[in-house]
Length: 395
Image (cartoon, rainbow, N blue to C red):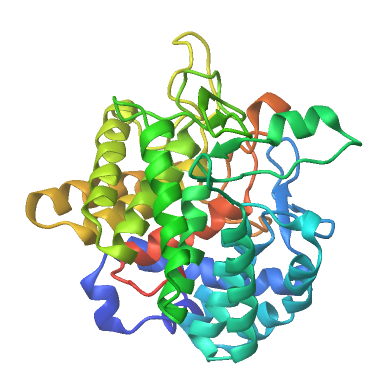
């Protein structure tokens, strides 16, 4: 580790953890600092096609735009350098725009505002950031469909796009589990019970319908939008309806573990364990997950470093919530995933790379694989921090 990187960590912290993780975390903070000179107020959206090492930037609102803010706030937490907090706060107008424009509001409000506004409030105590996060939590709560017990994922487009409206109405997805953290935070901040009730209601419906008996998962589930009657499980980004999309599996693992951390409820810990047990079997001896766990045995299939990063962070969180041999098991599994990323996906040693991880699979059916992804980068940083014993995050 160079002298700049080593200043981010006290020597006893490095000695207490894995030196390779500490070294990688130093490179991550350095890369984040370097990117600011290129990014300005732009937010990474996806890497250039063909495994390129430069970012394609968000054009205005995008569901992924909060992950770089999360990376900035974690860098500030580690270094204390106001260049990171200043860069995150300079993006505030972008997030206020989301609050002011209902067509930009969907189930991803948790990804956006936990990693931007909740982070700001927790790190600086700025009351304006708190109010933005609470406004986002109220909007997210309003998406709860009482008749089915779930948070509506995507928004219908109205009469101008009937096909999109038919697709979106009555649909929940695995990704939303990670967004529930915004509701749990709002409940802690305000004491308002309906934030907790909606989060618990959606988690219960997820456990009943998205999580299969064998511990695998659907990406999406469809309900009758009028009656709430459960209809069928489907996929959107996975290989097939009955397959198991690896990033969806990782969202559920991290999300259920996070729900238990927020509430202490045993059913969410049990759900996280169920997902972790099955994921361990599905991974076999591999260290980076393939993009879907039910792919045909013939042929070569893309891996998804972003699924690996979410998985590593979720497993290390689960390890912190359990004890003894079980905690050691999940920590070892999480470190295996993290080691796999460091061995085959880590870009922090490549001076031409703007991102942190190669080989992400955004949407394989749409041709977006083998690329950098901002959510992969954020969770990679979170996992490295969890492996070093850090426990203060914005979820």
